[in-house]
Length: 258
Ligand SMILES: Nc1ncnc2c1ncn2[C@@H]1O[C@H](COP(=O)(O)OP(=O)(O)OP(=O)(O)O)[C@@H](O)[C@H]1O
Ligand SMILES: [Mg+2]
Image (tube, rainbow, N blue to C red; front, top):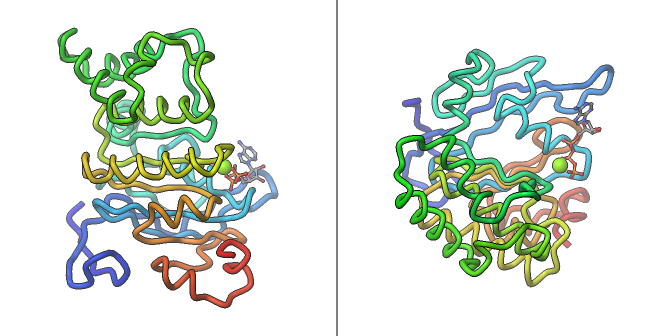
């Protein structure tokens, strides 16, 4: 994708940014239920974009559309220059290698050690790596999330916060260009949530990734977002910088930004 656009909210107003995701007029429903009615948004290279919305507003549906798990009823989704709905399975598989997805549930493989959990996507996605390179990458990813000691443990031996950090390590181990975080801090205590938010920022700085952070945790958005989009009733209700949201007197926005 070569198109660039000047954005006003992120972070240098004079610069143009490359769009790594562009969604136009996305509609997605199930049976008679309209979940996403008309959603258009862009993710720019290198930014953390937080997508806020009430439970059931279609945030998870949105990222499942982005990775091609759901087909849109209408509209287009471009990821790294590819129209997701037009890709065959092979090309969709190739695209997914560049897009890391941190599931809402964490979704570690319970019967595998932490090392095996990280090796699994690496062996699938980076087929030409030697054993030594795989080891190095696994160790580096665990170091980045501060959990080198957990390498030979089983997921069941770790706390919820640790499992989230391991899920993040498993996402970054394959060097994705884009990371989609689905509720990265849900269910965690405030201190652990803050740790995860810092890790998201560390990953952005170190790997220069572009991230979509789906959340209803306002602190997570405050700590990580360069720009915020609020979804409501199937459309983008508001898009802007953190200060605009903090200052807004709109009742719905205030219900998040207390
Ligand atoms: N596979 C599916 N089949 C039918 N309905 C679905 C499916 N997936 C999601 N939905 C419906 O779409 C709506 C939005 O769900 P979604 O999971 O995207 O919400 P969410 O904004 O992620 O909520 P939360 O904050 O609780 O995670 C819900 O009403 C849900 O029941
Ligand atoms: Mg969800």
